[in-house]
Amino acid sequence: MAKDEIKEENTAPSNFIEDFIDEDLKEGAYNRVQTRFPPEPNGYLHIGHAKAICINFGVKEKYNGVCNLRMDDTNPTKEDTEYVDAIKEDIEWLGFKWDNVYFASDYFDFLYECAIKLIKKGKAYVDDLNSDEIREYRGTLTEPGKNSPYRDRSVEENLDLFARMTAGEFKTGEKVLRAKIDMASPNLNMRDPIIYRILFAHHHRTGDKWCVYPMYDFAHPLSDACEKVTHSLCSLEFENHRPLYDWVCNECIDGEKPRQIEFARMNLNYTLTSKRKCLKLVQDGIVDGWNDPRMATISGMRRRGYPAEAIRDFCEKIGVSKAYSVIDFAMLESCVRDNLNKNAKRAMAVIDPIKLIIDNYPEDKVEELEVAYHPDHDEFGSRTIPFGRELWIERDDFMAEPISKYRRLFVGNEVRLYKAYCVTCTGYDTDENGEVIAVHATYDPETFGGDTPDGRKVRGTIHWVYAGDNNEAEVRLYDRLFNVENPSDEEGVGSFEDNLNPDSLKVKKAYVERALSNTQPGERYQFMRIGYFCTDSDSKPGKLVFNRTVQLRDSFNKKK
Image (cartoon, rainbow, N blue to C red; front, top):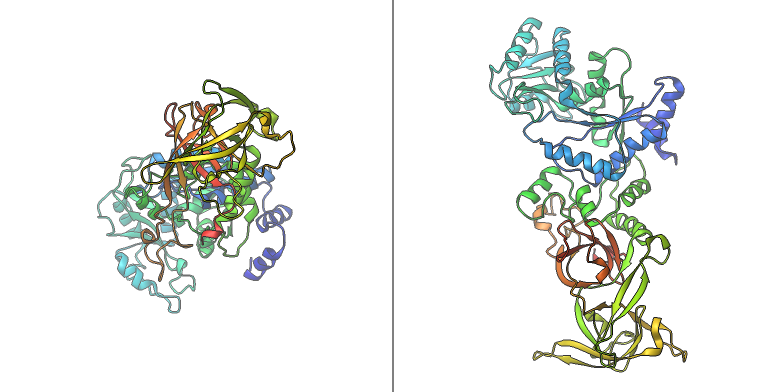
């Protein structure tokens, strides 16, 4: 399809990928729809992969088709079964299910036969040029390349050399197998690309069977064709590879062939998705593994408390296009916040505690308050919250010298304690440094539930946690990992390590209400007036750990 046709399709409000599929089905190019998601198992999936997952599996669902998961394991030096397992877990967590699991290595014998087929057709040759020489012979965008001196080897010689490559007679990099296409092509990808290279490396599935491995641009289209994929959906950086994709299929495959369609990849500001750079963050101990809640990996977002539904909603909102754009991270946080507002249980926690002592409340009295977990979801149930003479409150809910319009605790002011009583501040205690260590108040027993029988106005309401329960917790306040919108290595920006946010993690000692004593990893809460939090995988009874998922209001743009 011509570029102007693609542009015209993209201006329509509909999903251009689905428009292309509809056209193919209408014209009879295919009588079914099959896609695939083909990650390389050399790292963990990130938020950009989530978009590709939603597109490929979304197409499957719309057309009642098939979507396979295929691991592109053609580079054994970087791949590991740990990544394979993590990829599967992430896809299932997002709410999708593949029809089959395949590996590019399943097709190594077939791919090798296709290479032999190309040699016999005079469409591939063994080249002795090294990588620097191949690059030099390749030419530039404005100058054509020149033929390798080994380009015109006979079919018999190429078959012999390729067999000897396979037998391990040559060293890594000593010889390669190249497709014979057109060294003068305006598309550099068509200038006799390498399709096989020598690599002595143990493969996580095939062991030491092979010492020659196919290149991605050769293995990918043939793997698609092998699986009977109809529409190969990929990100826009592969647009210039499409002629090579089609060439490989046309030369090696008879009958129905897949169609490649490209879409713009997701670019999210303040994030890093390069697997190489993410691996460095992990290996250098800058983050706590691939699932660190500051990482843009799906596993990191899951650990931070992002709901899968929110990520899918985010991918749907940004839509599908061919235009390059950078998405504001605040948009993702908005989707997370909207979802949690509807679905997260409410609870009380104090993350910067100071003691509140209600002097006229009986010392030996403890009341049990019945409080719903969510104002709009009766099915969430309720819990009992103890209330007594000594409570924990947030330090910033008291000011010895209040600023203008401050409505919380200061001497002489009355506030509501959430779901309990109205209290009036009477004084405070300080340590030898003048630091406030306790606030004193009296309560009005006629105001249980926050009502004032005489109709007086009490403008402030604060949350609290009963100090008689020893529910101490560690709270991890996560912020963005980088200080700049594009933390990658770019001129004028500096190394991505130079752009780390020193305040991306703050750890606080907090107190939480008794109902959270047996919380399980992954459970999400709105800590009232503070933010949305998730129980961390490090958490256990007696040593609770919570991660801040997102603040109650959008503070992201204010930090720019």
